Amino acid sequence: MLVSVVIPARNDAEMLERCLASLAAQSRRPDEIVVVDNGSTDRTRAVAEAAGARVVWEPIAGIPRASSAGFDAARGGLIARIDADSVCPPGWLASVIARFDGDPALSVVSGSGDFYDAGPITRRLGKSWWVGGLYWSMTIYLGHPPIFGSNFAMRREVWTEIGPEVHREERDIHDDLDLSLHVKPWMTVRYDRDLVVGISARPFATWSGFTRRLSWIVPTLRNHWPEDSPWARRAARRRYLEEQREAVA
Image 1: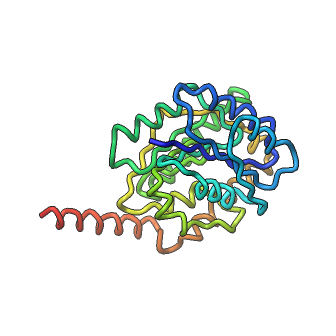
Image 2: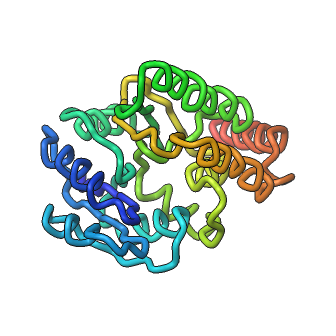
């Protein structure tokens, strides 16, 4: 299938160069790379174009708006998303495609991240507490694994259905958690612990940066309250499964 990789970026020239080099080294290269330049004033655009990426200009700052612009522009039947600071191992994209080839019912696959620019304690805490903790808590809340914005892929049909509903205009929310909350009862989301990319610990380099990221969780959930509360989501899932059983009967 045609595969697109979407990368939102804002003043990320140096890290983006490393990210794009890791995509160039893939055993199965993407059919297109869409870099969304979210109002950069550095060499982000030049770096993207030099690597053969298609650049989409999104001047209004905000990850939700930038990532949505990239998904809208992607041409692939499979749309993968990483961040400008992601570094993908050579077999990453081949592994992503294999997950979808092996499971026609799969809607979204989400992986994990390993902090490559932090000390051993920060790496351990980041992977177990931040990434692992969010996966654990949000799986309970959502009723399915959350989508991890630095490393996931979805079928085009998923974005076609939920793209018009996501909250694009708000900056201080987690776009990946917002996307997770828009997942429909008939969509299948799987977490694959073996699907790992390198990610930067720069958002957690300062206490203010960490608390700012943490503070985005509440407004993201509040945007979906109460219609997407845990009990409402489980009730919708039960109704869907009952309808499927009745249809088969």
